[in-house]
Image (cartoon, rainbow, N blue to C red; front, side, top):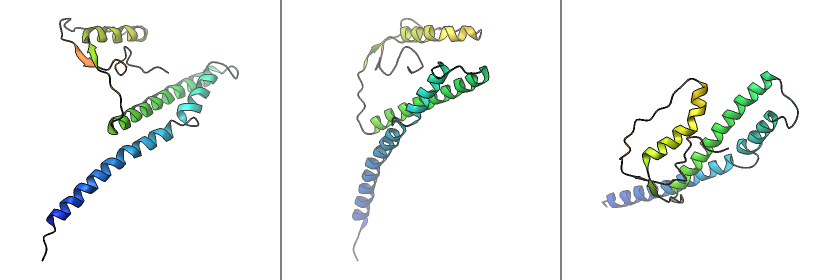
Length: 152
């Protein structure tokens, strides 16, 4: 009889390492596929914007409303794909992060300032009640924009 416990442990560890290497590349492949020029990120986004901007002619109010809704959904999908790309970069250790001291109260004020116009249209008041003496936090300002919405 031969004890194969060590061999089994080694095989399990080897498989775990192999699976860990495969997972990020699968995520990267999926995110690349979703970001190709012929994808939703490209054609549908720009086609919807062109229709709404009247590039191909005027739309009825019902059509404009439908296309506005579609464009918002495409933007949301585009943001989700961007988030997926970021996740794949994190998993594959390829995400560049440049931490800087960030003053949280100032950041919150910037976010509120960008949201107040839309909130006012809905009769919503945005207020902040945060201590101004908080110590700075470390964050990558490229990943913590002043607006909660990603640029188009």
